[in-house]
Image (cartoon, rainbow, N blue to C red; front, top):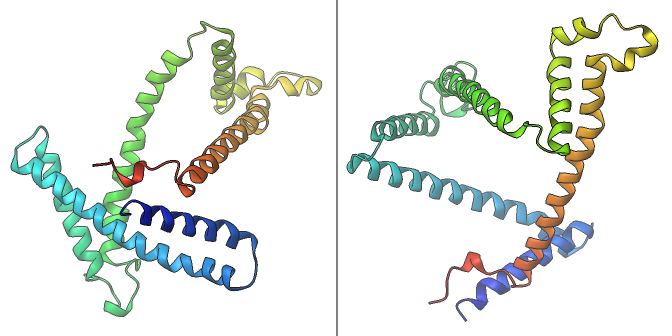
Length: 226
């Protein structure tokens, strides 16, 4: 019985969300619209659980002097300072009545002056990992890898000034062979088709997994049987 109640709640909630999306009036649609408030409440508790888990993990690393525990200390300091500044609106020009992200508030300064540069640094470091992975992936060992390598070279050259310099001498009737034009064509047609195929596959997977959860076939979220 303890496992059946969550299954019943999941089934009712899932069916209300599915049917309420297609029914535009009546009590079912009203219940469907009210679920957005419930989701907001659940999201708040999810943030609380996530913050508690972050504190638990990093305090344990600091207490045990685990590897790179100093980074955990920096994480805890940044988390604590940002949380206090945001919750109590410290440094907000308009006080409690103003928005927490006022242009001259401390929280906005933390976001613009600290978080944004750090995020940009992380993305800059990812460029080196992408280059290393591309070197391994673009080896022309198969026909598919060769096509991927050729397309990648066209896009890389077409997105830089050197691409226009290499093929800028072509006459107007051969402008479709211009590297910038080829790069735009690849991004607009084959790339878009591939992205849509991936999104359709993801959508079908989400639908299948959701139906398995709604009808109680997938029960991993309930934990293991004792």
